[in-house]
Length: 70
Image (cartoon, rainbow, N blue to C red; front, side, top):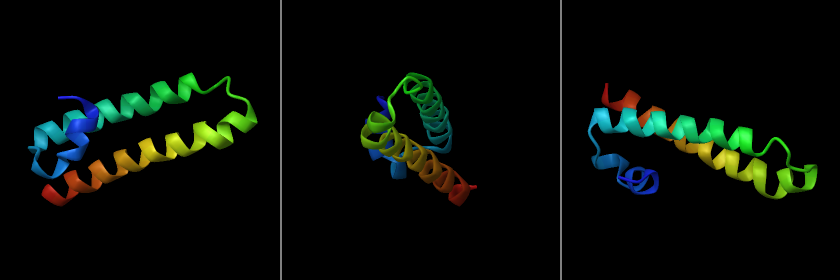
C-alpha cells in the first residue's frame, strides 16, 4: 500500500500497519530534509518549510493514533 493510501486509511489499519506507516513517514521526513538542504531561503519559505511541516504533522498524527490504541 502506498504511503498516501495508507495515511488516508489510518483509522482502519492494524497496529503493525500503523507502525510500518510511521517508519515509512519518518524515512520520508529525513529524505526530504536531505533533499532541501540546497534550497534558497525563498524556495524554503515557499515550498520546503510548509511541506516539511505537513510531513511532520502526519508523523505526529500517526504517533497519536498508535498511542490511542495501546
